[in-house]
Image (cartoon, rainbow, N blue to C red; front, side):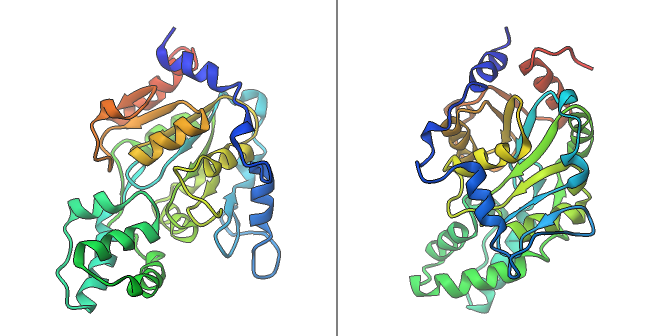
Length: 288
């Protein structure tokens, strides 16, 4: 049996006993769904259910997919996994620094700062340039205010769209990211990738972010029953999957800073064209 398949089979019996006793994935998202300004969640023009502050999104056309035909629920990280957003994020960061007469950061530094949410990014940016802690809140506000429009330089990694086309034919797909929800939806729509995902959960959708397992478990909860697989690129993603008890497929060309062998994973891939076959193997299914 393929090693990923063994891990996957074990993961299907996952218990939610690790969850705090006062909160479950379903109840967490129900609470989030009530956080809209008018207390309602209404469909948008693209079929998403949007929540104005944080929240999550669901596409109704995918929601009604025949569950008997679904092989697995596959959740993806976003930045560094499906898309290379570092050039746009670098532009926002350097705008904040130039306004304070400070030197800009380069692209490699930007990539190292990405992965733990906007607040963490700003904290690392301040530390790198010796900016006082009192500037954290105003800099974070400026950063988030510019984030929705930061899509012009962002690109999917090669082969992503084709892989998602193949995977979505038999599986339900979702996103669990530490990127704030609104910019997440904005970039997915800009790139035309929103059509693939039934559930999208952002870094401000819940009180906690990855590597806490709750966001990932909430995402799977909204996707329904079935085998679970998480695809990501970083130390944060690997830890999240391990803590959630979900098999992890590692994209090796993302934003990680540690050697591959230090990250727990069921399989590793460099090209998205290989991902459908890896999923097939993990599920004990013949390649198409």
